[in-house]
Image (cartoon, rainbow, N blue to C red; front, top):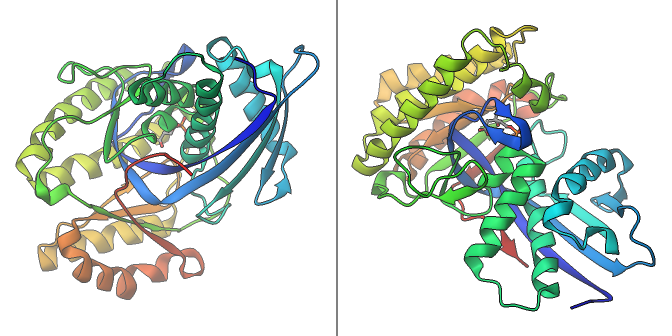
Amino acid sequence: KTLENGSYTWSSPSNIALVKYWGKKEHQIPENPSISFTLNNCKTVTTLSFSKKENNDDFSFEVYLDGENKDDFKPKIETFFKRIEVYLPFLKDYHFKIETSNTFPHSSGIASSASGMSALASCLMSVERSLSGVKVTDEYFIQKASFLARLGSGSASRSLEGDLVVWGKHQDIAESSDLFGVKYSFEVHQNFKNYQDTILLVDKGEKQVSSTIGHNLMHNHPFAEERFKQAHKNLSSLIGVLKNGDLKAFIDIVESEALTLHAMMMTSMPYFILMKPNTLEIINKIWAFREKTNSNVCFTLDAGANVHVLFPEAESELVNEFIKNELVAYCQNGHYISDRIGFGAKLL
Ligand code: PMV
């Protein structure tokens, strides 16, 4: 089928890893499996408009963020298009207009690559579906969208579905794959339903280390092999924990994963410290609060200074008070985002 023009709009969320992806091989193949909560409020909305063009020599596209032309996004998207061209042969037949906006403030220090790349991949899959003569199943659609999103940004492969997604081959999860994310299929205890994630914006500056550089630092890293083994082990343990609802064991795995991610950056060459003093203040406050109240609040971190505060829905009142009274003071301009588990990309 050929189409002259059309447009699709998708929203896709960010996600927060419990077992972290850090280190990759060629073609965006992860060195270890990872698992994340899909978020609900932090998302990207992307409209992809396409119109048939005369020649098919080159990619042709324009990019807008919140209505403003963004030429500085073009190299990343050009790289993405080159990687996925063999899987979407129509890419050079059309001119694309990509209009995107995030629900979270840009330069909040929250990576928009997972939500952005998964939204764009979903839009492109909608184009493929409308061009394809055959009926495309939802399963194929989501899996290929995740496959494509991975080639944009590894963690983006975990944003298509919810509420928990695994990416990377793991021995205990038969359907897991290095090529795309899969919805977590084992039993999940009520304790983990609608888990809350409040993101404390400690430092809204540009990330010091791009994740591309970060992943590459795991090549020849002295602790790499042990770290990759540990991620496998932690995911195995987490399967049991998610099933039996053991919140204390959950905290041990999640906080250790966050600190290990940062430990890898501190022990690479060159080395980096991505935490800020306020990151540590917050972590210490969380630990003290847990001592005092027996709450199950815990933290996790991405490759930056911001802190994700995770807690069961049942503790919302208690923990929200704690956040307001004791943690917001450590956020830049008092900024934070209340989020919770969500269910993935949606066609609007
Ligand atoms: O998707 P990337 O290449 O930006 O890597 C992100 C990796 C972490 O966010 C630090 C961890 C993870 O698993 O999401």
